[in-house]
Image (cartoon, rainbow, N blue to C red; front, side, top):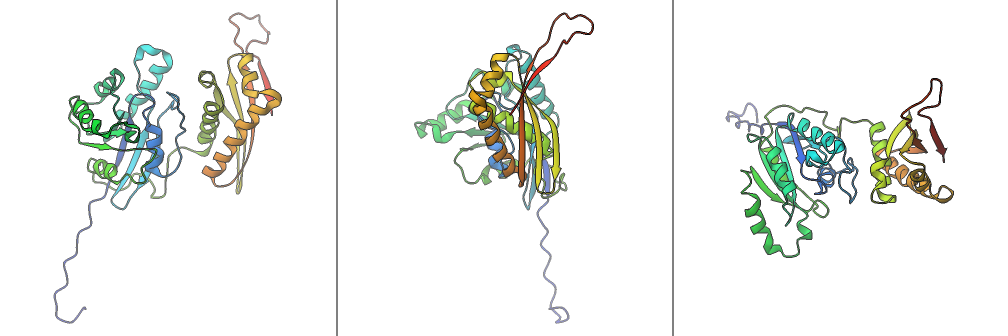
Length: 311
């Protein structure tokens, strides 16, 4: 106690605070978005069983006592020769790599392909890379894990190698601890309670797009775009009007379904997810529009007109 003549106990210095950004990269469909959601503890990124569901970089923020992580979920890196969309997605990945302090490179346990090697070649040599071996729960023979690790570690030097199951693991402390070591010692970059830098309007469009992957066939969702026409934010309610754009009239009919049943199911599932994320009631109205572009049109003609269907 003060004044009793005893020397004061030395103060224990706090651990240095760390904060930074980490790119989550990998080929398509290795579970990057699922991993982001589990690390953050909230569903921010949309997920599906099909490749290239993610189209743009998405920041998810996790704040611990000792570190703040800014995870950047990226589209699956592909061969640039795959088409314009792939080149656009690849630019998103390269842009993310230019602005992060470390990389979480996600591969699928037991499956290391030429596409994975291409990801490794795209990573800056000086960048700290933690290899995340995902889907270990799907490995038929766990004895194959060590030979697989030996195979992949020949690609480059890794700061750490962490096997996980993004679907099943309850905690990810070993991965977070390995990544925290490579964040700069600095104060937080974001508010302590922040989850992302995106607004609700962005997530409304992404949630609708996720439901298109869930309810429609394998190819059709890639031909669909979602735009938020109106987003009204009230204290306990969001009024959202969105348009689903397709390329052909036949696609429009598929999205709407018989007597509007398909569109109603898409809207209902999207609304429930929005209410969970936004923590309020949501009124959602969806339109389906066919984009028509005419190569030649006379002055005053209706080039570019759209058919709208409201449900």
